Length: 240
Image (cartoon, rainbow, N blue to C red; front, side, top):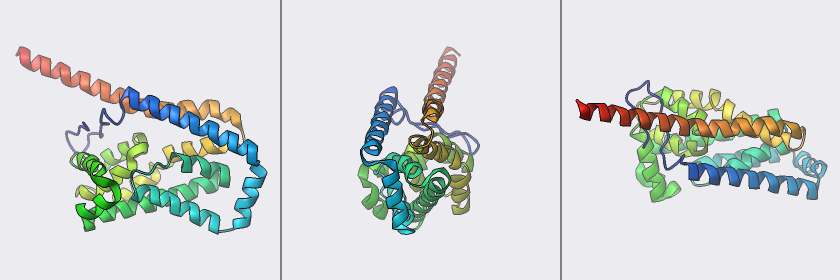
């Protein structure tokens, strides 16, 4: 369960979202995706891929931004492959810019849908299980600091958190946009750079992938320490 004691307490990850089993599945999926992309690049040729993007003109980034936006509005859709592909297709700086536009735009739409259209509409986009997940987050988002924690460490489920922020009256749209933009540059930048490294400098993979792994491990470590502290406090209370 996500734990929050007050407005200044960082939001803690749900054990079901960041259990060792979930982490292993995510890591294997990410590695399989990376290998698949490498095979695809070798078969098609990076020059041919990039020439196709260049020939498409402004339509290419517009399609990409639309797809990235959709992964936030339709929360069950995964955005990992899209983030990696942006660095490959557009290069690091343009890829990061297009990805951030899609993420902030999609997240803001999710936020506004939750705040002004309510649960019945949100349910149509995320399903009943997704709505239950969102409710869990919304009840424990106490302010922008908890949102910043989620944006930095819980990027894999930030689409659900965006809906939750809309339900949580303690967070304004301006706060959501600022946190999603400036804090989001860190995890999003790493993912886009990981994609770029596959076609420009593959030696960077040895640096970027461990960092991405560390970002995934931090919430699990914090959750473990929080549970140990809570168990210790409970034991002390029972002794007294």
